[in-house]
Image (cartoon, rainbow, N blue to C red):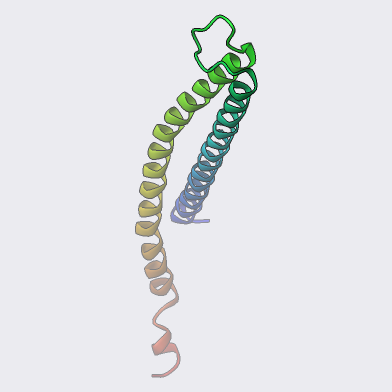
Amino acid sequence: MKPRDSAVRAKRFEVAESGRKVASLEGTIRDFEHLASELARQIANEEDRTGVRDQAHFAYSTFAKAAAQRRANLLTSVEDLKGKLAAAKREYEEAALALKRLEPTEERDRVHHKGDPRAAAGG
């Protein structure tokens, strides 16, 4: 195996890994946003049930307080993950561009080593 073949294989693996990382982050963000919206719905239902909407009120539901804190934590995590997603997308694009640069060189080398196919065909 030539060093160039190893480099192309390694770069293909890097591109695939970067793509999986991007997809994983997007899925996690989507899941967290869904959980946060579900918690918001549960908080609203609890506030409707108790009739107390002011979080500073002494009779405010402890379940609603806990759910609100969890929702806030999820939304903070979503913002953090969005930053990581942007970085992962940049890494993916850079790796894909590097692979694109390597692959045409690999094709040119293959044709060069095998010779011109038109010459072998007698054309």
